[in-house]
Image (cartoon, rainbow, N blue to C red; front, top):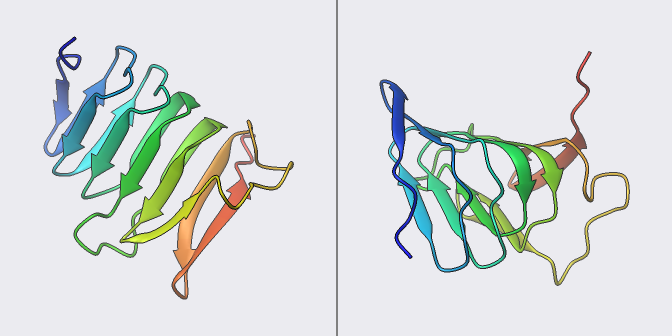
Length: 121
């Protein structure tokens, strides 16, 4: 099955509004906004930030060309892999209960992935 057709929101921002299934991959030259679930085995890649307003169960790689300022924002974190600028974490190292399945922000701090609850007020 082919990947969903992306919708261009603005300069360098890619918006995906259909579910991504296992084996599908999306690449954004800038930021990536995903409005549907990312299934196990699916991969989303961006040179900039990634925003996922649905469950992330696959792989999310932000800042792929070494952008250490890139971030991943997600409303339901259940990933196979998360990565920013090549620094990654897989589910072999279980996520803490306070972030698993929750809304989070992921950023780099001194070459370490920081996964923090996203406080929406």
